[in-house]
Length: 295
Ligand SMILES: *[C@@H]1O[C@H](CO)[C@@H](O)[C@H](O)[C@H]1NC(C)=O
Ligand SMILES: *[C@@H]1O[C@H](CO)[C@@H](O)[C@H](O)[C@H]1NC(C)=O
Ligand SMILES: *[C@@H]1O[C@H](CO)[C@@H](O)[C@H](O)[C@H]1NC(C)=O
Image 1: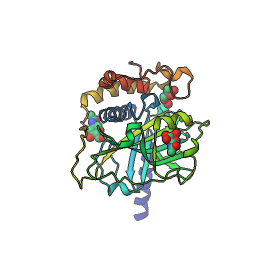
Image 2: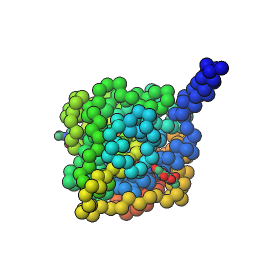
Image 3: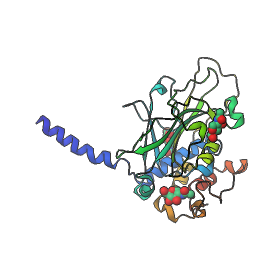
């Protein structure tokens, strides 16, 4: 009786776990749209995360520590909660499985400081690297595990007291076979320091970012004195509108007219840097990010 119910439970769980990684196009598109708009709203896209580096085709799952709860994009996380080692997983539709199943990935966890002021290093476009790992592989359950020691082991966030809610973002990028780690970020045990994401991508031939997320972490034990921009929530109607166009490009990924036809390894030559005015039109910028049919 006991063992039979265990078996029944196991049988009912297995298909769910195996299927977890292949989500419906609509679900993934909605998550991608929501994440993109939130990352634009808090000033992460298009700088320091360049639009040309993005080809979001998967939803990123983030947890701090084994067995902990999923963290939603944009969620406020306490310094204590973020002490657990991040666990990453991705969910994507069958239509992009050819590109993601069996791929190798690079994962980064970077601090872009507080919106508006940033940290001093941000003046030079620099981010604080809290984790960098190459050679991540995807398991059947959608979890990403690194097959080699991390370059920078996870250093849990410790934002300065009173410096506002820092934007800690995570990116999962395709790591092509011609990937070559920049010399200064090629050795395991490289300590936390600042870096430019854009330079890292271009120097290493890193592929497109396929999944991204961010959390807000603040040490509010002192009053915020700097002028920190508010991080407004995104409108549900905007998410739905963008999700519709993302759905189309996810459903027929290679059919979409995009920079993918240029044969460049990542930095689509057809891409034109958005101006501040264009950034105001979130959906337009985001459409470029997916090479969406609606440009
Ligand atoms: C190391 O390389 C990264 C990526 O190319 C770069 O952004 C960073 O400034 C470099 N750091 C140092 C200390 O040279
Ligand atoms: C967007 O995602 C956030 C969590 O990251 C969630 O609270 C919100 O309801 C989502 N909005 C829409 C319109 O799906
Ligand atoms: C974006 O991803 C899709 C699905 O994996 C792929 O077909 C397309 O070529 C990619 N586009 C670029 C510009 O990398």
